[in-house]
Length: 318
Image 1: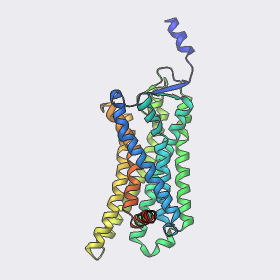
Image 2 (image 1 turned 90 degrees about the vertical axis):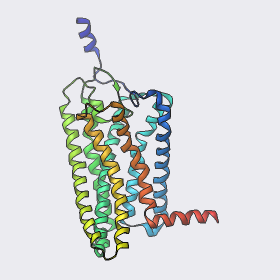
Image 3 (image 1 turned 30 degrees about the vertical axis):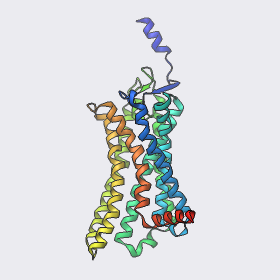
Image 4 (image 1 turned 90 degrees about the horizontal axis):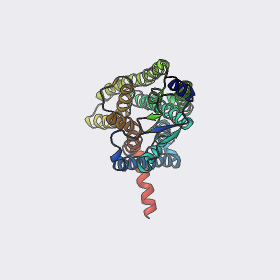
């Protein structure tokens, strides 16, 4: 017993490295799992850079909706790049070690840009609401300075709300294990390894989830309720179907982000019966799928971007 106490007391308050397991229970299939992961990441990189390139190149696309789309593209690029390269290195090279400070940095970027993405979805929903419900006032309500202020507010909100995560994680003593049963450093997965009362971290995490995602989702739902009412009042069936198709695809993108994100956050705290490998797979879905499908849905389904893309390729062909 005395020797055990000595060993316990000599344990450093912070581990120098954490060990990321990837997807627990599926280690043998890591190489196969990496194929769709790598393909989705490549599509996300290519698609989001294409959106940024086309909007920058075409002055006719310099408007509120396209500025929000560019903000979303940048957020998706940062969010996926903060996680996927390390995940792929685990799958391909079994490079599972991660420095403690690097882990906290990844944690900050992950939670910061998740909150920013949620805010941009809200801003885009409000843009659609103004465009459909108040079309004559759209250009006067959503001016470029207003769009810039909204974007800045979303970045500041995400940055400030994510700041306590690494500070809280750093203050706890880690004397049990340094193995994180996941492919990246999610806040609650890290602090669960601490040998201390982590209720502050847990409560703060829940506060952020419900205040950011809960508030944004309810505001988006109210916006789309008003949009749906406006669509149903459109005079022709073709106009109703066209507008509903555009808004419907946008809504699918939003749900593809929020449903896996909420599942991941809540499973960490309450989903003790959820298989760990399924939980980790779902935790990767909301960091992989939205960055991949956002440029496809918003780009391909938006006529102006689609036309510019075709024009670009036909110019190169001639």
